[in-house]
Length: 326
Image 1 (cartoon, rainbow, N blue to C red):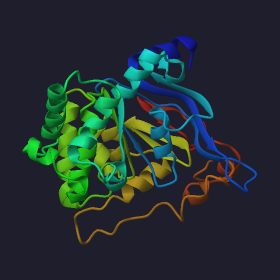
Image 2 (image 1 turned 180 degrees about the horizontal axis):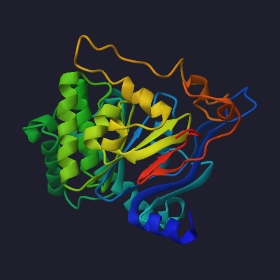
Image 3 (image 1 turned 180 degrees about the vertical axis):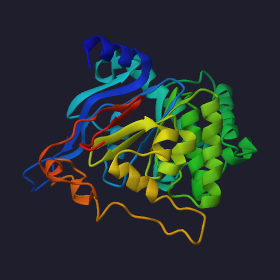
């Protein structure tokens, strides 16, 4: 990518990463754990970027790096074209408000001693976003109404411990919405919820998408992204395997790993057996295989895959893949 193209890419994106690496030291190991290894992604304002992969692919670490919960080892993260580690104090405060994260586990995300009001108002108080108690009340009640916890005044007085998992996740979303963010980073927001509740939470997210919010959604379920995301990034062992439009990537996956993810999606037909195109389990990021990280599980693997890391390259209009045979 030329310098001019790189600058244009950063300017157009609300959030972007450039050759991002996040390595962790592990006690007793002679090499770092490469959780994120050279990842460049971007999402424009009002769009949704889906990031999909199995556990251990680096998705959550990438999300935490974007919101500055994890510091990168190398590479850059940009917000509106500015390096988030070079922001002024006032810009840093705005970044903290404008980019918010919803975590996977609603039981761990909120202090159990809090009331719902305490949980939703906490960030607003910290950043001084309300000038009076009445304004704070208005912000909290409006956020609860957005996630359909009504009557909001009644829910605000309840203890977090009295809520179901689905209700707690709604509170977690409400406390984010109270900050009026531009971008929401969602880390498996429905994976721990019952199927009956998942649809309700995704409907709330869909309404926010219509309102123009920007999303980065982390998930292991590629089928969800078909309907919610605009673009999908497939990650494996800290690296990007494929990037494409959400409809195209589920209809016609090109990378063997993406094909395996799509093939594993359950079909509501008792005669259909879920196919598994990927052999074995994802290797440890402490001891990744040489060459293509997917080659030990890939049905197409040949000698070049064992020795050379495939470049992430354009393979069709709007599509990138890291495979020697795509």
